[in-house]
Image (tube, rainbow, N blue to C red):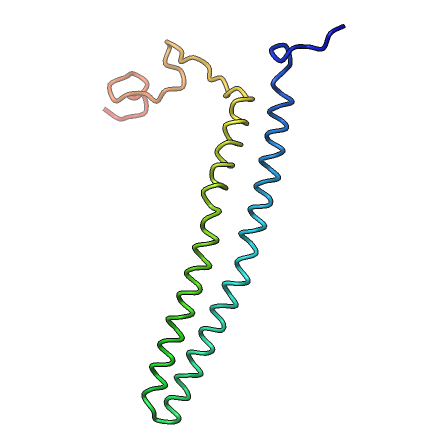
Length: 140
């Protein structure tokens, strides 16, 4: 017996494999994005420490040049943090694409829940202001 042609094969194994590949790629991207968080905290910690130490030293020595060093170090650490955060953010669009594709794959394999058609008797609909049902509990 000959092997089935590509048209005769079920698309389900291909979709499962695609889903698995997307899931593994998403996990790797999530790990990569997570690695940036401790780095960002370290950068912030060093930036605050150096800036506060420079400010304290400037007040102790009563020398205004040290305040310039504190401002420059704060700006430098802010730039390093911004650059690192931008590198982290570069992964977000691909993660969003994977989430969208996975959602579409899932939505394509499931049928939406069927709602019963609306009945002509009006059962289940709230009574209107002029209907008899709406007038039953009201005093004249």
